[in-house]
Image (cartoon, rainbow, N blue to C red):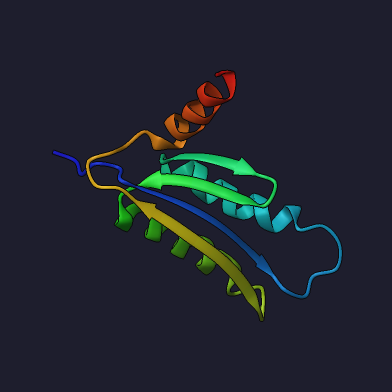
Amino acid sequence: MSKPKEVIANFSIFPLKPAGSMAPFVAKAEKIIEDSGLASQLGPMGTDIEGTWDEVMQVIDKCFKALEPIEDRIMVNFKADFRRGREGRLTSKVESVRKAMEQ
């Protein structure tokens, strides 16, 4: 039996010194996230990902390890929300706000 996907994390990862667009670095991380099979949502300032604590941390670690050999300085911004017994919140939290807006 698999563990409930009780963690939503929002994170961004990028090198601090490149000139120009961050898109190639973000794309490298997004490919890793997509390949993980976890629910995720790319946003303009970071990516939300939902899974168990260990699954989410493994994905973030893979993203770091993909950039570390090619960059001297990497910034990782991270925040997480754990809620026991709840999953599917990546979409349900947004739906809840949209419903409240209709009232």
